[in-house]
Amino acid sequence: MRVQPINRALCKDWCLNKHYARRMPPITYAFGLFIRGKMEGICTFGTPVSHTLRTLFDGYKLMELNRLVTNESVPKNSLSRLVSGSLRLMPKPLVVVSYADTSKGHHGYIYQATNWIYTGLSAEFKDYYIKGKEHLHNGTIMDMSRGQENRVQWLRDKFGYDLITIDRPRKHRYFYFLGSKNQRKDMTNKLPYKVEPYPKGDNERYDASYEPPTQTHLF
Image (tube, rainbow, N blue to C red; front, top):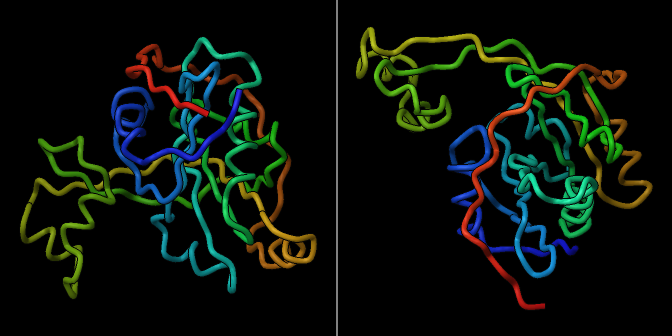
């Protein structure tokens, strides 16, 4: 079992057909979990959508762990091996954030198992959707109005009553700090959220039975 950097193109099928979000996130770094030479999972990192979040840790780069998925047949410890191995290969110093979606019944147990810092639930927020195009993510819709002086008004003028808002599900928010002992201490001091006890509860499972075409890697 090894974790290796992979080309972002290898993540597309996993993101669109296996992960529950069914869409491609922004990917800056991608890693694959290889077992006996076959790729059995992916872990990807990209720039967080939230501009506010990106400004909280002055002097440090921030990345979001935005996709984590493996085939169901992998050994029990595979997810933690994939997360830990990917973090070891990331550039340092670095602040990493990730979320567990409450609307999917997730609590972030993999982040708890790999010693991330839990900081409670994300803020309440409303997402924009377009009637008849519900597959479009809020970020994709907002990108349509990039460069406009009033982005929301531009969207309203373009889509009229088809532009609707819905409450965004709150998510469990986790942080992980990469760097020297002093750098990690500095990051901790800059953490703007209260550290809270890990959440508990029963996880809901989603259909992840789809298996992407076999990818192999020669070591």
